Image 1 (cartoon, rainbow, N blue to C red):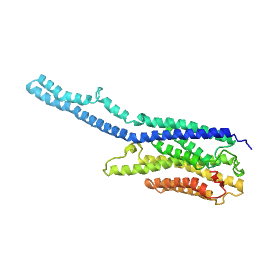
Image 2: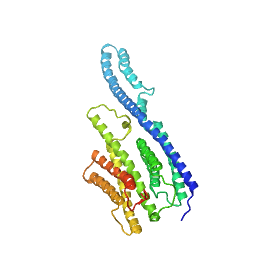
Image 3: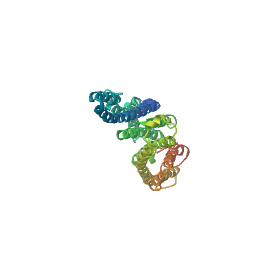
Image 4: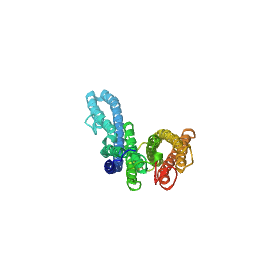
Length: 378
């Protein structure tokens, strides 16, 4: 049996504390971005509307010289061409030049380009960039805490509720940052970092257990396979839960605007449309569902190795199956029954609430083969 290194265990706890503190500051940065970015989006919208009006005026003014030229030609034939030309320059050319150059020294082209560039608000959200940077720093410190915990225990660091929770928070942040490489989901930062902080606090306050050995039933390579996939799937479900909540809020905002109401969406102006959120959530849920299917399958194989049966209707097994059924219903209803919009979002939210119930209530308050002195294998 591996020797426990209590010194590394103490360093692990210090790293966890530092990571949690860094996540708190990152959460505040994302929250500040959320609070201020609505004003940025409103200014961008006003700027774009102004530039569109400028373009319309310029197009209208561009037609005037031709009309004025026809009039001046007629006037020149009757009373002198020179006066007509001067009149044409004053009546036709000047307004066009005035409109063309208003707001920009570059002949009216730059304002539209500036408006388009200004609408790229994501590149100007300093608080969001700070939040991402702090999230990366927190992730590195957090990973050091998880790794030192594993080295100290001489095994993979997800053998109890404390370790499952800290590793789960690590993967939630890691998945969020990885997705940011492909898509700008910084609007989820407040939700994701907030959940990570809650998980870290819960691990330290409610589920803490000193570094130690596992009970014999958990000393298996299936612990690595089964629990790692379960944690990764839960991290993906966390992202889609956040998207589903935002989808419901955005859908109500869009309905209000369509009905002619005043847009008071604030930071929601920076969030993609409800249908875009739903489509992205559906794709991520599909991947997470495959992972959860493997979690249930590998758990059954591990149960046969440990207890001599694949399925025994243990409380943990039942709720893992309930989660699978809810997300299977979500995917089926959306793909074949046309469940879109609020119904799909609510079904995704119900699925995540089942995940939370399985992780917290079932692990803590229900006894069974998966419970080991008040903690669980995940």
